[in-house]
Length: 203
Image (cartoon, rainbow, N blue to C red):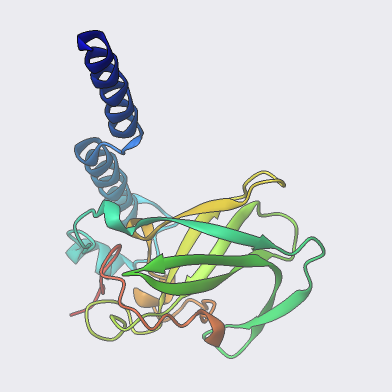
């Protein structure tokens, strides 16, 4: 009997250890995210490719962000379009650019089903997936024109993709009106707030 109890306790211990081992380390994740954000600030201040004007650079301190939240690192199931069609995404200057309808990401926030269209530049020169979206924080705490997410292309047989909304970033139009930026399509308008990622640049 004692042996059985000891064996059961050992099994439970192994299970609990395995579950804890699969959980992301919040402090390590936050440190990595903050390092990335610091590097972006440095780039905005110093790089020739910064969207900021010389006048803006002189006054620039740092971009504003929500604190890191692992709750907004969300696994999503993907419906991949094996033969993606080409769609035109409107730009902020009323032009349009060609993108491929790569697929759809389906996920949940607060137990409410959500989905976002996933796009890929039609030029074939970009291997990064592009997910433009809007949410109810736009025009209040975040840029009114919406924000973007990038994601690495998963393997062809993958069924999930990770959406890290802590990585949500502003289009260059948020900093400088000289730029032309993709406008998130109507299908990518989330009805749930996403208080994660980059905040508004201007007060």
